[in-house]
Image 1 (cartoon, rainbow, N blue to C red):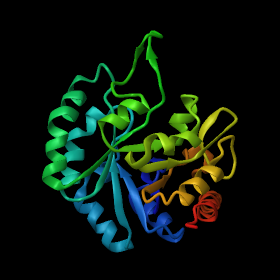
Image 2 (image 1 turned 30 degrees about the horizontal axis):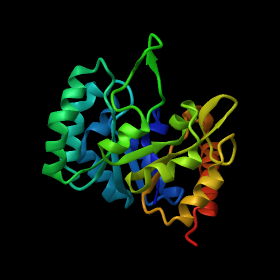
Image 3 (image 1 turned 45 degrees about the horizontal axis):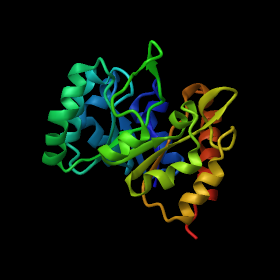
Length: 247
């Protein structure tokens, strides 16, 4: 199933976001808990689900500053038992977040039957020596549990996206879909340097059963121009439907 990401609409309210998703034919969305207080309000989120008839299939935390949203995240996922959650591995100096992931998050997952994925992040180092994240490599993520693959993180780390399904195999449960163009990531699917069409065709051929989230940066959607924005998203959604077909 293809989801639309709330993090692609940072300057719109969630009501508008849900309306966009419904008008474009999405059946479900991803909500990233953020500084937008609407994303931290489970009662309001449930009201949007009921009003628009869309499922919240994934609840996630941002790549940076996740520590600030731990309490809100716990309150939200508690009201959506069984939901899939996407989280990044801790950065080396994020002591509270690292402790939370090691001790509290496994208990939270067990209590509310949450299905957790660790998201791939671009490889970076501190002072050119120390990796910025623990469990940052794909090998470490594969060993730690189930994985959400961000194509742009792989591109920034000079990884070949076509090799990833074979390497992660059954551990890959979710994929953030976008393309890269002109040195910038999170561009619409049909335009860019990544072989997204071949990637989707391969996944369909191999009977991939996980979910996808369409994640396009606001500036690449012409945010603020609603008509153009809807056209860009529809073009990417149609691209996905064309190439991800079960054979």
